[in-house]
Amino acid sequence: MDRKISLYLVPTPIGNRADITLRALDVLKSVDVVLAEDTRTSGALLAHYGISRPLQAFHIHNEHRAVEKLIERMAAGEQFALVSDAGTPGIADPGFLLVRECRKAGLNVECLPGPTALIPALVQSGFPCDRFVFEGFLPHKKGKQTTLKRLAEEDRTVVVYESPHRLIKTLEDLQLHLGADRVISVSRELTKIHEETVTGTVPKVLAHFQGKDVKGEIVIVIDGKKEH
Ligand code: SAM
Image (tube, protein in one colour):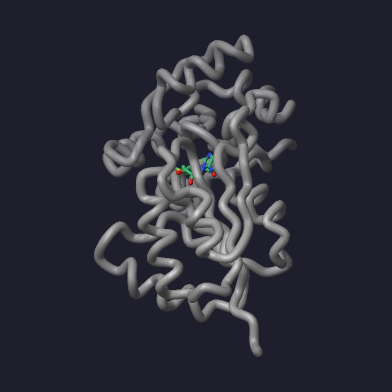
């Protein structure tokens, strides 16, 4: 007998809508309800693929109170798919809490492989990707300097998510903690029309973005510390 999946985590494109997988489309068509970080964003995406399923909001502001009821419905036989605004749910997006509670309740969960921003940024950086550390978003204020000090000593490649309006400040902080010789790679707008990847020493990358009105979504990849 087929193992019944109660919750599918379904990665969605990070820009280019052609990056959805055939299996993601099949799952989205087949579930009873699609849980979405933003029902408008995901409604438009589903409509683009010609899929019409009931949507229910599931985001950081309601996940704690929504989980218990969702587990009850799954236990009663309903099948759900969770999507975030872009990429893989649970990666710097809601998902972890629901998966943990499903596991506790003995419900089957399956995460489909698919789009996420960290992997293309890492692989196209040209830095070693056999081992790496994903830090998600850096702390905004408290703890940022401590985190950067720790990352400066990291010998594996480090991947960080950043917003465009904090990019310059973060690059300045990186220059302070990593020094002028460490190499980084900044990927902006992956899979989109204005995609660019800028690689070089921190001062070189900083000079590229300084004075510009930086827009779009950004991943910073930091080459690991080398033993001299
Ligand atoms: N769940 C997503 C994933 O799997 O990558 C990440 C969601 S997180 C809220 C959004 C952040 O991911 C952005 O601030 C940026 O750092 C990164 N990101 C998402 N799409 C991107 C893209 N097309 N290009 C570069 N970075 C992107």
